[in-house]
Amino acid sequence: MNPYAPGAGTPPPELAGRDGEQTSFGVLLKRLAAGRPEQNLALWGLRGVGKTVLLNRFASEAEDAGWGTGYVELRGRGPLRPVLAQIAAQAAHSLARGEGVKKRLRRSLSVISSFSLTAMPAGITFKVEVDPTPGRGDSGQLDVDLQDVLVELGETARAAGGGVVFFFDEMQFAEKDDLQALLAAFHRIAQRQLPVALVCAGLPQLPGRLAEASSYAERLFQYVEIGRLTDDSAKAALTVPASREDVEYEPAALDFILARAERYPFFLQTYGRYAWLVAARSPITEGDAKAADTIAQEQLDSGFHRARFNRATAAERRYLTAIAELGDGAQQTAEVSARLGADQRRTALVRQNLIDVKGLIYSPQRGYVDFTAPLFGDYIRRQHPLESL
Image (cartoon, rainbow, N blue to C red):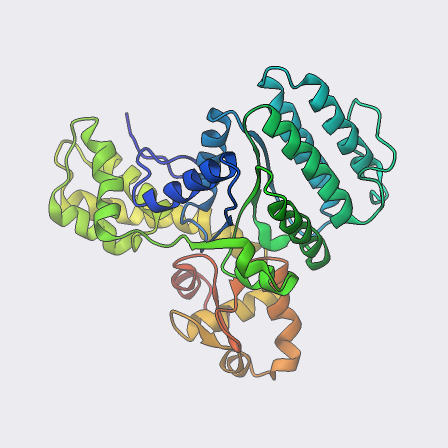
């Protein structure tokens, strides 16, 4: 009966502290359905704050409203066209629930078929079981072809009395040229006031990458930082699920867990899970929370942090450790290099790989770096001191 659910994108038993984000998405759907313009959504934040949970919640809400949806997690650098073909087909097929749109839907799928067959990289195939439409979606220019696809989907969705939402997770991994084409297509679709929306999520570097790709990205999106919870919301994330099972917390136990988890949603779920397992009865006491602390930290070390550290090369691990040993928060890149006994030119490639390829650090401002995972520095200092590497 343990109510807590730590996991990657796993819905928490109580989605506390995210009412504003859910309201923003609801407004987006309603305005587009009414034929009014509205900015797309870009969610950004550290690992473990619930960005993927929100994307999944939004997708469910859109589907419940009769909208077509396409969802993808970008797993690294690679061409965007095959991904767009797949999620466009997802969205088209999900519109098939609407009455009287079969002919319109087939037309949309034929343009998606043209799009999927054009300028695909060698070795990548994707097929739509509808004959392509020559001259639509097949010019080889991603922005032009994607606009053709989005127009067809938007018109089909409008005929079905709904709309279409494309969801992208880990958006920071999109290549700049592909991202530029994607934003250009959605910009033109917004000007035509079709019910087609883009909702993306990514690490803290996402707003910067969108801005680099397009000069109008700041107007195309509403940017929403997804951060740690407030005290009240963090307590609700713990107490509301427990109360459904007739279990309470002592105030001191809540204070201890909030301090140790630093109000990050994934960490709260982890601490809640093990406090529940340790406690013999209600209420869960401060002693129970402290007894669970060692288990929770071990689980976070082995699951959340170690896997990330192990993805780094030897040189990258030394760079990560140098950041950690300088302390918590953003650190100057010059000081990180000095800690390693190297100049910044020698460490620049390592730093960029950790940002662009591995997604383990980001640059909150020019000349500074910080970790994308909460409490990562604490883990590194305890487990991987620089002299051991």
